[in-house]
Image 1 (cartoon, rainbow, N blue to C red):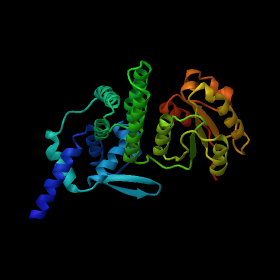
Image 2: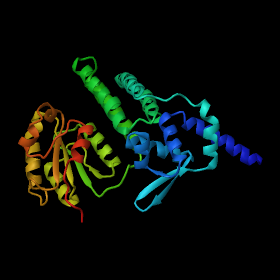
Image 3: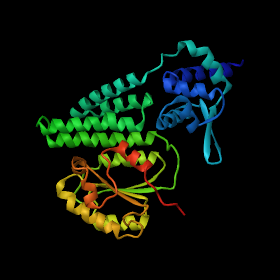
Image 4: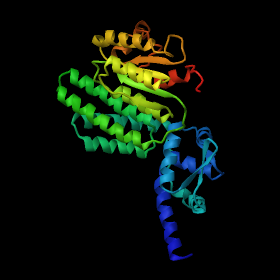
Length: 326
């Protein structure tokens, strides 16, 4: 073997050891030793969540350990080099023990506690480091958003209401979380593509975007085209955007009782747009703190559904009957 070839093998070994320190990537590589697999194949074989599989494959591809090849509408992954298979056999005894679902849950709780403490102190670099630990461990975007960031912000909210931090400090914590979410969303590849569109916006008077942003990011990762309008969207502008983009779903965030009447007017005007009549195959959803506190409010406002968080949104989407796309 040439000196160059030996150096390449040593480099491959170093990369492989780093990547296979994670049990999920180890499971994926093990399955790929038997041949090319699609994401769906690997989900079935490894019993990992689909977002996790896609995330790990992206990292393995970036490291040069796997190759992606398109066949029709599907993408198949295979081991990039014979050295990977050889090294995997040689290094098998040096790899760490399997991580169990219980330890993952414990890790999420630990990350949440540390993340809350970092937000409480306004220590953004420390919060970023915790997020990076989650990403390196292959945690799904959904779990990071729900079990680390959202859980931490709920706790920060409780601390604010006890008077232990000021409104400015509470706003700082939210701003740090939003900046980190922007980094997280760029880390994950789209799981699959579809022809669906969704518009997201906060009703006029609502400046709280983070929950809606989480939902939009997850829906985008599921292959939807998302149009995020942000905070405090004037009703007429909201309606014009829906007319222009003709989304399959409109998501509206309503945070306080003072925004209920404006939300009702917005939904009423949206119902006047062709294709968004009640019982059509395009849907209007509403959520937010005041809706979560009174779940039946959504139907009184004229919406088709509500969901208290992004996990419930995913469940709702799986049960909606969309019209056929032209």
